[in-house]
Image (cartoon, rainbow, N blue to C red; front, side, top):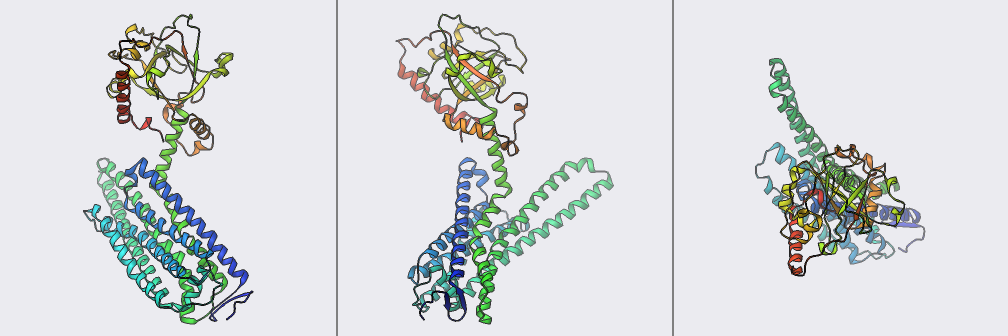
Length: 540
């Protein structure tokens, strides 16, 4: 039959106008692109969680969902390619098999979430770490049995001579009337795995309801016998655990529902063709096109609303706000006339952790903290400003810090009291522990100044990125998503500006001191930093 310019006519079953066919193709392209982008972001966020906090990513259910999203992304990519490549070609047949294979893999891994819940929560399997070694081979075997039949029928089916259709039209519309058994076989495997997953999730839900009922009876008995005070903590913990499990069970029911809802429309179309030999309506074909290609997007939305993922995002946002807003300080460096007398140290101690060896970092003999930016001098705009991260160190932990990190590699000076803190008595720092001595004398020891508030100023790795993040996370919108620490309520987060001043020429190392030895000590100190600094000093 010669191709008609206005109709797409195939075997007396499908009859679409050219405009309707183009509408279906555009819907396929749009929905597939959305699923492909969603799968990409799922993979990106999972890799980030794996790098930042591998313990939170070490969950079977999370890995199964990510694998399902990956399969949906491959399916979306194949649908995009098949919508653009003209058929018939050998690539079209192979592309259709790959797309259906990825769809079945996605449904199988989503079903594993329900199976895993039953084995752990209902059957109480002891060796939970070994379950994952059975999931993947079982899924591969299940998919292979299903796809082998499709490959056989594709290899033995008749060749279509019409060349004006795209691969997508050939696989998902034309072949439905030529390879009926292959499509019914595929839907049988697809819905069977979803049916088992639904049964598993319902079984877990029934056990959860039974345990909640037993807990309610136990609480009532304790109240009747007067034993609520002894078992109150245990009952509260049990109620919390049941609340968490209820959320898990609900999500395990949602996961197998997604492939069922997404593919039911194509199954209805196949029933029309197989049993009734009727032409499905254009609306039904459009529903099948949209839902089947949006499966990756729906799985991604469930993944992004997972409690473990949302808790991780909340922790990251709070950490970034603390790092770039609460601990953000603008340090102004300014060299004064050396003739100005040395300013005596006051009640607070400042350590600056340089990114370069101390031989290339200026030594600041004193520092001034302005509680109000307006208190700066008129030439403040001409000074060099460097954003740094302020980390406050209690006196009790300074000794441990001295053990884990070489304090001699830190520029050392003292600060006067800041508004909002109780003033302390001035502490006279002897010349043996002055800032210059700590940088030039490798054997110098830092005294433990009891009652002194010590602070570490850590330069950001990228100044531009630090300023950008400071402006982003200090906005009013981010306050609704981030939790500020309790210390920020007593200390203004943006009103203090630290000004470092050099009042005298610094003393350089003597000629008898080997500079290579100093640099070796610096490198060794840096290596100790990487192993000793806590989560608060990491950069993400």
